[in-house]
Amino acid sequence: MSAITESIPQLVAHRGNAYEFPENTLPALRSALELGITHVEFDVQLSADLVPVVMHDANLKRCAGLDRDALQMHWNELSEIPVGEAERFGDRYTDVCIPSLAQVVELLTNFPKATVFVELKRASLRKFGTEVMVHQVSEVLRPIASQVVLISFDLPVINYTKQNTRLAVGWVLSEYSILSAIKAEATLPNYLFCDEAKLPTDDSRLWRGPWQWAIYEVTDRARAAQLVTRGAHLIETMQVRRMLRELRSLRPVVPG
Image (tube, rainbow, N blue to C red; front, side, top):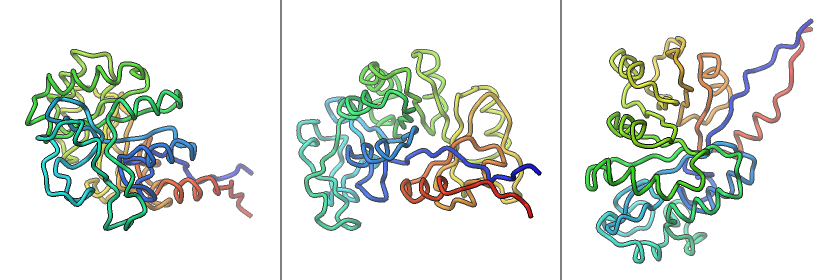
């Protein structure tokens, strides 16, 4: 009799190990990598002096408790701002500050087998333009370019990156629709990202194509396994340690 095994997905650390550490910070990313995660995702904005910085929100309120626009601040000022997410962690991480993309690249050089998904945030794209942002970010990523996938919700960014760099690309879907499928077939990104909540509930197969699917906002092992049977290649989660533990505990089940 053959063993029947539950589908085991590969995990992407969403903003690093963001359940245990402040998101998009060096401790969060280092923790995920040291746990053995081979795919990490984080977000990039540009400072006023065009330094790529690793952060999700353009406003500092949520992570730093400071109601200011980071895109209007220079890197030397941003580098000293703690982003310890006091509402989640209290005063545990008051010494954790915004990292530059260059600092994250330095960390990643120690993990050459990791695949790195770098999301270009819309606020910075609107303020500084696609050409400027892709150039600034891709220059900093040059030392680890073979590990990098540049991702964005904006399809023109994906097309520009494909035409002007050698980086792999991933399109983050705003909606899972027939129109989006047509656009994906025309663009042919290396990866498609989609929020789990945006997928149809009928358990239909994900669109087939030359891309790999990454489904995010997943925290349940059974749901992750179900998504793999639908065609997902990667499962993105902030619950890195728990999901890893649960997946590693899976053993073949032999019917009696």
